[in-house]
Image 1 (cartoon, rainbow, N blue to C red):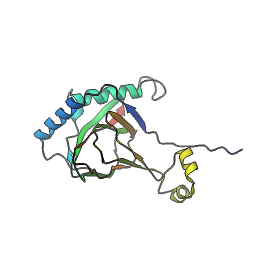
Image 2 (cartoon, rainbow, N blue to C red):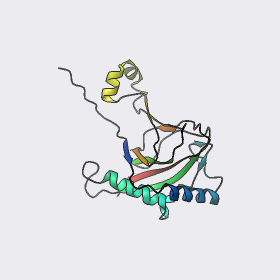
Image 3 (cartoon, helix red, strand yellow):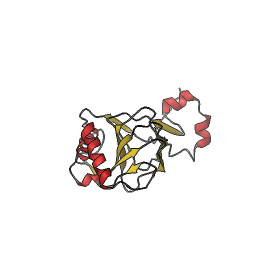
Image 4 (cartoon, helix red, strand yellow):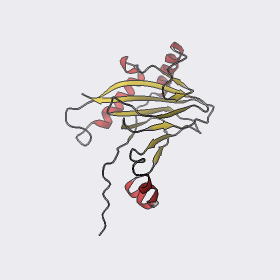
Length: 196
């Protein structure tokens, strides 16, 4: 008998939010953009990146993300009793046609995440790079697709944005956003999480 043990997995959590004040969030983000039209340039090439401290004020983004994280991390199956997720940083992104976010990670936190607010057709998808891809490239490339699917091991993995979906992943996981091809805005909110 052959047994395959998928050891040392990298968990990525997806949660579709039931309460999602999309219009309020978009209005808040555009208001922030009016205050600082230039924004920051970090992993973004093009697009607009807000300041990274939107968690500091009680606003529709902070409320929505906090509520989603509480739902995601409630219960002993996720974290030890008494541990609560705390948003260390929170920011908004607006990508227009051909804007991207280059490969990056989120140092200084335990988890990072994104909440997709507005996702038009021809959106830029999120790509994660396997943290073992460099050391194990030959092995990964030699596996057939059945094994790759059974143990979920790929050189990289794509997550397609869905409005009102929260995606939370370990902060060390290298990721990027592909070129957005729509004329409509792709709006998202990203954040870093620690635990108390």
